[in-house]
Image 1 (cartoon, one colour):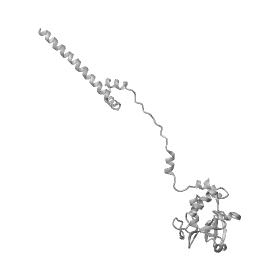
Image 2 (tube, rainbow, N blue to C red):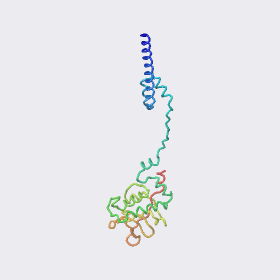
Image 3 (cartoon, rainbow, N blue to C red):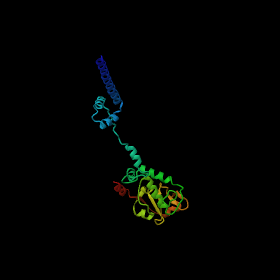
Image 4 (cartoon, rainbow, N blue to C red):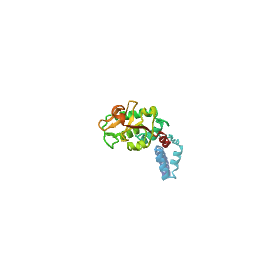
Length: 229
């Protein structure tokens, strides 16, 4: 009788142990499944012998990462790196090899007219004051034609003669008073210049200025184009 009781107690403990171990293993598997993939990988690194965790991780669907091609925004780069000032290629596009183009002449006219009425100041190149050579230099700069800021006499030396009807084309330079004064031809009737008494203005060739003209010249377009190329 005692033997039967002992056997029953022994079997009870054995069955209880089996059930307890089974539940523990079952609970352990559930916790592994709930772990995110990155935590499972970390656990595998820490416990490489954990076969249950390894089997569970391998059964999961592999995570795929969609690759997106990164295309540089060249337009933004251009806007960020582009200068606010015009560059030499602009002058090349607007000036032909033989004469000022229509587009360049219009740009030059717009630049001059924007300065009409600005007061005179000797040695100034703007934007609030101009002398005669400073006005020429600034207007051509704004139109995209670049040369060194200098005096009327030096501009005469670095430019080329103009004859006939070309003398009265917009953009031709006209020199007065023994090369002491310079203006930009507007048409056959007159020119733009920086007057000591009235600032930037349009004046007629007849009257006061008629007998003070030294000559007409034009910036060396061919030299400019050669430099840009």
